[in-house]
Image (cartoon, rainbow, N blue to C red; front, top):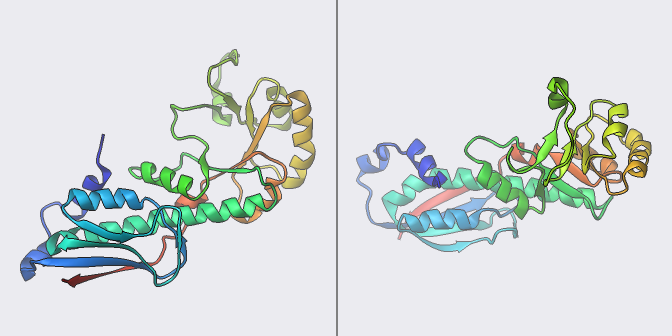
Length: 263
């Protein structure tokens, strides 16, 4: 298994820390990572493991899923000063990203459940290369779920698949079958044989009439919708079981700052 933090460190410090070495900094110190805004903590245990692997002691951190406020110290560690300087920027950037994803997900979940207490907010596969492990984890910590982790974990017949299929396929499989119909008529045709339909590019008022019609064809059919703005979540949540979104992955990183002091 790839250790992603080792990869991040090799990118940021491939041959040594020129500045710290030039200044001859040695001894023991402490780093405090503080937030300048409200957020939800995520992947703290992963960062803690990275620090321990590098011989540092984590003395304080906000638990995964807990909320923090502006001026709160969310992660604090101590040990070898040159090592702290090497890990500083990686740590701050990492937390600014994953905590933002968890925060954005929680906001979306809470917004959706005001309209539909049973709705699921699920994120797509459109993660950043090399960061999927932590993005998916941050979504779960924020209260969301995953539409698909990868191409290997589910069957989703998209409009592109339908465009290039050369023959009719017998739709029977161990895994749930999800179809993204191209037209309203195709939605009616797919409903009896699918476990879930992914309905993109429909207005909420269209779904109000379409979804009940589809469920008369298959009472167990689940309905998902994607490609919508987070601000429109309440309008769609009334009519569907799952809202698929990419938005949390691309939410603005939280504003964090770090201080390193000698002990």
